[in-house]
Length: 342
Image 1 (cartoon, rainbow, N blue to C red):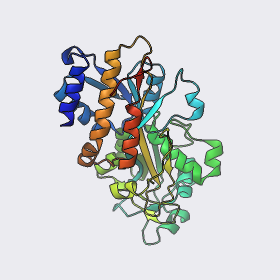
Image 2 (spheres, helix red, strand yellow; image 1 turned 90 degrees about the vertical axis):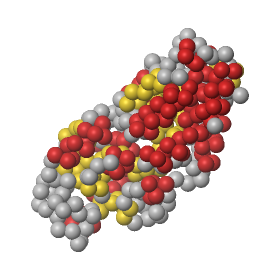
Image 3 (cartoon, rainbow, N blue to C red; image 1 turned 30 degrees about the horizontal axis):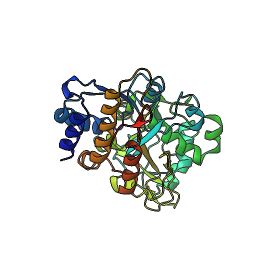
Image 4 (tube, rainbow, N blue to C red; image 1 turned 180 degrees about the horizontal axis):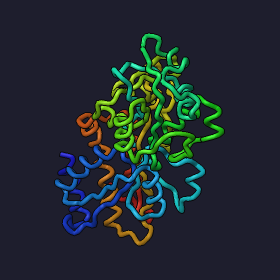
């Protein structure tokens, strides 16, 4: 029904479907399975080609800032400092929830618990072996090997890294001061893997390895996932349910918000959002009205239909209240200060 409604709108707007320019986007790897599936269905039903390149959040922000794509995608919202480098306001459109998951390669795949403080010290290079007393203290019933810890991190700029190091900085003043927060940081120790698949491959290949990745990639692999202590002192394994528990009913009007270190007692503490990034005023760089309308219709359709795809593909959908607020903002997008959607 919704696809038929979109077709009617597009034809009524005087936009020949087969003659429409493709919509181009680039950015985050985490939502790629969701976006690629949704966009393929949209193209099948409307004839509008969608080209989304999964190049990482850092690349997505860079390309939308340079206006070489119709939309960017990022697992980290753009900071106030970075927003100042944009030539015009940018709209953050959250599409679903995700999480940064810690995975390890240890014998017997133990049900391991780690805290933010211990994780920070591992990634700083202070804790170098698995049988370190501070790890053993968190896991008294686990027989930990004396293996050296092989630290694995992302080699590319990513929202996954941004979420992970934000969590570390919240639990380690030294990390905050010496390494900091960003989509890419100067790692004190470790090996880099490109994208979630690269990190997963290195962790799988190296005994004693520890790494981080998006929840979906861990669910699709056989890697050993770690429970993380949250602010309530509970050890929470990442799952669709514990990620959903992390979000509250309150959110800022610009949709830039962090769910890291949620206060929710049942919430997984490294929960994140992922965003599509667009310019709310679309008349820039010689863009046509038809091109702008194609983007606005795609975004509206995607947000309306995202929950169905999210449930099917293993993502966590937005709460209904947030979905409605996002739709209101999409429907306010303009071309030469006139609304693109009814």
